[in-house]
Amino acid sequence: LLRDMNAQAATLKARERELAADRAEAAALRAELEAARRREESMAKGLLSLDVFKLDIIARELKEMETLLGVMYKAAAGPEKTALRTDLGALRDQVRDIMNRCLSETQKLHIGSTVQGHDASLLLDILEALRDLHPAHAHRPATAARPPPAAA
Image 1 (cartoon, one colour):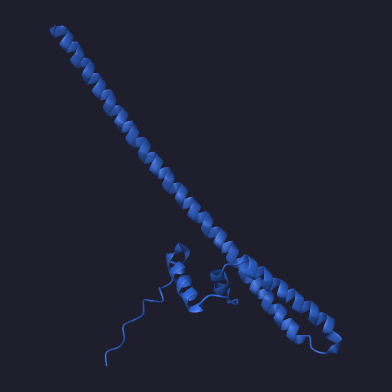
Image 2: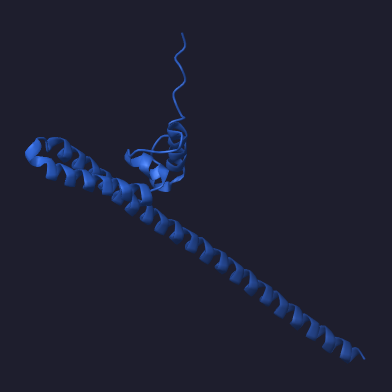
């Protein structure tokens, strides 16, 4: 009976050591999983910022083309340039249409394009808040942080 109890105690201690090892392995796996989640989140944010950056470049190029076509339209004066003026106006309208269909109101505001149907001051506030949240713009001072007024 004593021998059986000693054998059971040894078996119990062995099982407790196995349980402790399994718990340590589970904790290590949880830590590894959490590290992998953080890496995935970081990579996703990086890709998002790249897409936003590319879209910003495309939006700025479209706005530049719209401006250039407007300047060319105004410069093409005279009856002999009516066809050219018509083509330039159509091209400018096409670029504006692409911008209206493909860019959000915030993106249009960001590149200086016309914002329709929204309060521009509200969009300015939203854009500034987004800039403050975006890591690439962290070096910019927040517009709300103004120096205190000078004492009189």
